[in-house]
Length: 233
Image (tube, rainbow, N blue to C red; front, side):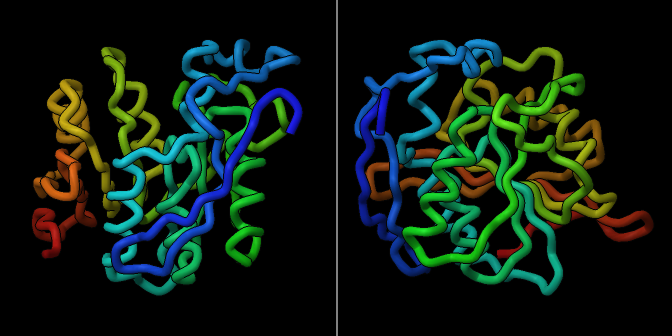
């Protein structure tokens, strides 16, 4: 592959079949000959992050493997990177849209669908900015509203303007769940407050085992007139 090197690895997912995943070989990879990533504000240091297997991504994939899926439920993964959780949900038969801002995330998803002998899955440009244009490679922006919005390690920087919460609000159905796995980053309280202002209750589950420490945050907004949200066990 010109410009960067890749590897294929087998990833065990608790509660699901293994995934075959094509990822970047290491954190030193970088290739942006047309300046597509730079135009989106992705620096050379940030460029390879989408293509790595992250512990929080594995935790979210395991959570999706165990979560009961509802017939006809629509799912959006934000900041998907290698989209492990999306692949798990897709293999279970859910209607999934994976999204990311990185110019190569869609291409890597396509290869990983092939590696796992899965049917095509929708991929969209997931720029959280409201005035963002389509991604340079032509992927459409996320459209519509979803029953479930998921993400892992998406609270990695301060979001004083509340762009992520606003993005979720634009794409959440009136009755919606939001599942976020976070490795105990300091931006979690502000995000929780922002979703609370939009009517989302929250239940947190501590994740501490196998070398990982973090939490699964399950937000929920009930339908109008329904009781307040309480996360299922």
